[in-house]
Length: 437
Image (cartoon, rainbow, N blue to C red; front, top):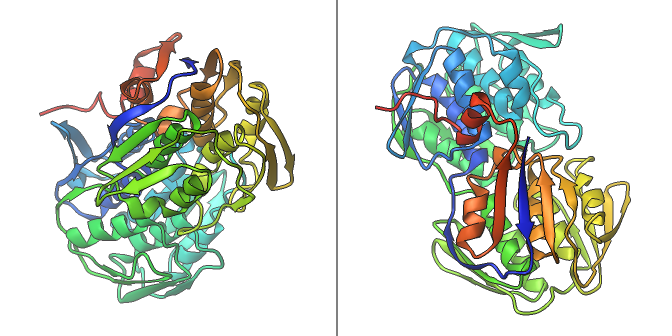
């Protein structure tokens, strides 16, 4: 177990470069199985989740290594269609591999995926979509067994615009016979990035970023070099860090349009928000103002992955705010931890009623999940005294060297590893045990 000790009170000031997007990298890594030539990925973040995905790919027979800052995946050596249980249950995004493994090997065997326990995340839409493509699926013994020697394009209608299901069907359809049309598809920027990668590899995908995506199946793709988009959730986290510490932070190398929903909320809180082509600056001098009502929605609505961080900001706002969580029903675990720091909030079903206090105080808290842990980091940076956050390995699933980023912006944080072993070191680094040429 590892922890952060944060000393609050310092304003975050300065500039920081956006890291590559975790939520774009994971499905793109799954997509590398669709081609039998090496793929070079630029801006791929070194994260625990990325490390897990790479180890899964290795277990399937892929060759993975880093060359400088580039990550190279060669799936030409892949021979295995069975996903390992332990690694897959550590990583929710292992489900993306179902479509790509099925497409590559005409069969796939996978355990039910794991990840943060932030609520019920059924994969029924994934399986319904694969069945529409003529896949045969059996569920038994805690595993999913798929056969698809004759995948055929079809119209796939989603009841809900699921990001994961949209991406999974995109992957499965790339080599299916004929055209697949996904209706009521999710519109997140990471889906646009997946489309960009697939087209760079010679596949034919159009419409990503809209509710209708078309995939024309082709027999084979080819290798490519591709740069992964910047992480909009990490970008948003550090911008909220400026607001909660009354600081002045610029995130460079990012896509401002992807954080529009957050920037509107920060402006409503009284922050000065400015943007350039690939940079966003948030400056705050005063205590944040309350926000009457915010609810999470699929893109371009306010993202569920920034709800916990906004929760921390509203915990020190001037007045009472309401946050409604529409995506995951169990994504308020940070609320109780924030109460240990003096926050005042009440949870009523899927809504949080937050009455801002003038100042939080340091306490020992637990990161129960990735984004909730990031919220506690922000709270600790603004609190009076020292805050100790346990289980930061959950935070490191999505934030690359967060302690160094905080220090670069003038914050005070110490990272402590307890009983750290070789495997823990490997997972923290993301892909460090992979051979380097």
